[in-house]
Image (spheres, rainbow, N blue to C red):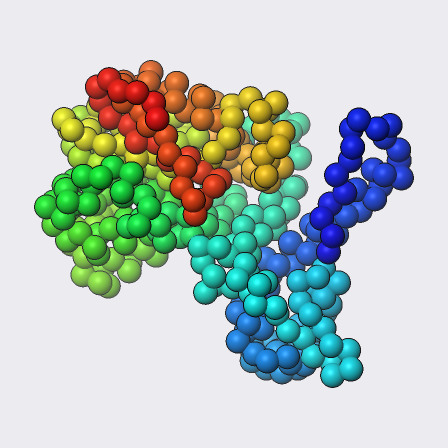
Length: 366
């Protein structure tokens, strides 16, 4: 499918030009929705493993119904995702497309990102009431959201922990090997903690999240593996206050959803021991709309904010900072919390997030 028509704002706008632009977007939305479904069903992984095959062969390989698979394939063909050979009646997935849509392509699997679209769409009914009342929506109202976020976090965080994220603070690996106390504030599924706990048995890891259902599967996995250095707890972090308990505190795409982000950041600053490090990952973008007009995922991020991040914050009585609370506000709030040395980093594998390394004391922003 062709890229969406970019309207030239320097020329007079016409209904025809805008109609073409919007029709293209509707088509793209349909393809992305079906991409999410194909990912969940393993259809892209199966297509990548097969030679050109009929819809029946593909359905059999996936253990799915042929009629539904055939209709899904029709979406993918007309959307220029899957190739079709009408003479043989066979379908195939180009290797270049497989490199962006299969589980083996992680951390570059864009089908994971596609999953956010059905989640947003499924909340249309509850959101209409939020618009009328100004109220929020609690986490438990969102179907599959923890699962979707866990997949996204696995790509951006878990896959990059050792090669990209820990090196942002060069001394971290040796300290973790020796043994330190680590907290993940707003841990979600807790896959990053599980990975670290397995790699660094001398260190102690604690995860806190508002919803026990988020980290429940990972806690069960840790128990199965016999990991005695990993623990989880369900708690509201607006009153987080554990002075001098931790050497490393992390939060991955979590602060802006909290009931009281400023109080949490102050609590994190107090909770660090001398020489402690706070590692905060959040969305790369500006606090100002006018600076995000060319953001490559601007519409998606603002949509996620409207449908999830803002409502869940408001439901807790929070400020509703939103997904794109922005790097300017994030740095300001870190300084107001008591951090004097704040350094921001971009990682090549993850252009849509910014990573802050914050410490007590004075330093320069890099």
